[in-house]
Length: 187
Ligand SMILES: [Zn+2]
Image 1 (cartoon, rainbow, N blue to C red):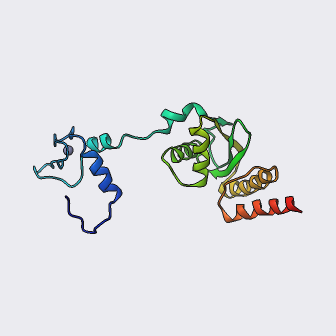
Image 2: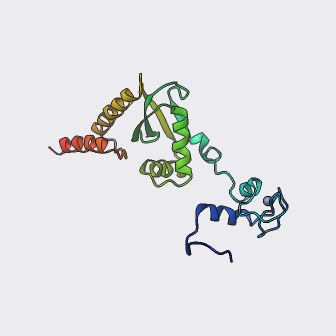
Image 3: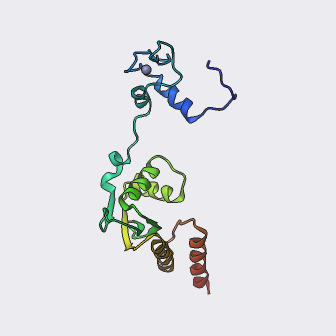
């Protein structure tokens, strides 16, 4: 048993090292369960990178879902954009966002969903993708700057909520827009 300064607390780094120690180290040759050996011949707290990689193979959504993610519009567009995320089969939008790096944002949404993010947008993506469905990222507006992309984002939240799409946007401003649209429906 290793001693801990604070009892009952397992950090992410602890878990990472434990998982890695289930393998012999390719760098220093430390056996299963043993500590890695540093340059001075003494045990090190951290495991070598190559051993860490064995314990935590990179989870890449691309391997599982690449063919289920489609982009409508130029995913390599430069500058700020407003985008929407839609379930292709139903045509239902689940989210509207803005970003200065569209392709990077698509990757981060998909990888967040794959890695088990609890964000509502990630859960929505995961539900569709893990059931074999296809998700579309639509370039809705190309914008001059960030401020404009935020205005357009709010505009599209209003448009899509009016059309009956149930958006999972969490911004207070967006929730207010969505609520206002729903109140109108009630009247
Ligand atoms: Zn090692």
